[in-house]
Image (cartoon, rainbow, N blue to C red; front, side):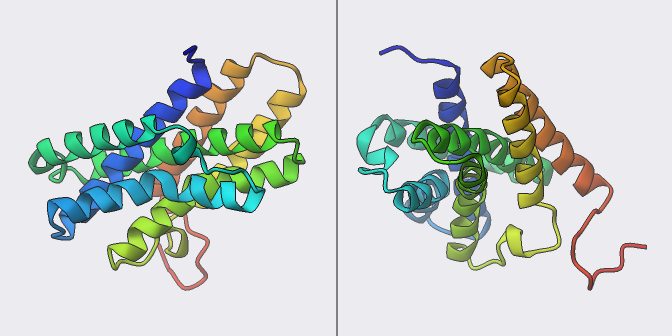
Length: 205
């Protein structure tokens, strides 16, 4: 089976999102089976909702059972190194940020490939990126990041728009993808460091 650059991105995104989910579960005192369930939901939730909305059947992880292996790899890495990783909140943040940047691209690519408009592709890309995290947080009994003060979905929208613009220029796809991923990660990191928020109820001064 030939694996292209997007496939590699998909594998990376699945593994890091599975790690993010497992770490969140372990941090909230879930048992190991519960952590595996949360890892699976985090890695597949956004893409599953995307496929259901787009009428893509079967959903991606049923069609390609390799995802179970990637999720287990992420889960195993999280459980083996949990005592080390959980000491560093920034590491958990990084896994989540890499995940949303990669899954934005995956969602955009799949939706455009199915013949939908760029507007629909943009929204499906963001859904792919953030809704796995939403389900992770809901099942972990914490307020989802997308509904908190942190800038979470906005970097995905900005990155998605930039990707669509770059794509329209005919520049190489891999370049477009890397620029988009880097931009989403950069915006998210800067937003956290500078305490950017869209909430009218938070005073950061």
